[in-house]
Length: 144
Image (cartoon, rainbow, N blue to C red):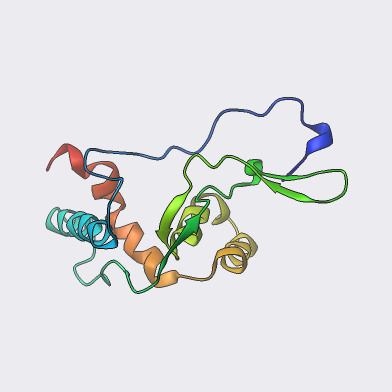
């Protein structure tokens, strides 16, 4: 987290997010679910995912999600008012995506994981799903 008064110029670097052919935007929740189901099948077929992974969780609603809550996107002004910036990745995602989006940065220490769970909810099962489809999302599109 940064203080606005000490910030002269924000860096334009941000965590890489891959966008591949067919990865959205999606018109329906069913399309999102089908896309992730396919990624799980690809990961399992090529032995990059456990064969008994819980499938994509579409039981929770789509909600507005910032999807990039990392320290450099959180600012405190002189009056201790919190500002959130960089809405480039934001959109309507399953409720548990905010938690999943925070973990790559906030997963370094146990107390960071607790902060992510406090801010976005604790979705451990969904996190395991995303870990198991990660290969297909980021590399598998090259071999499909």
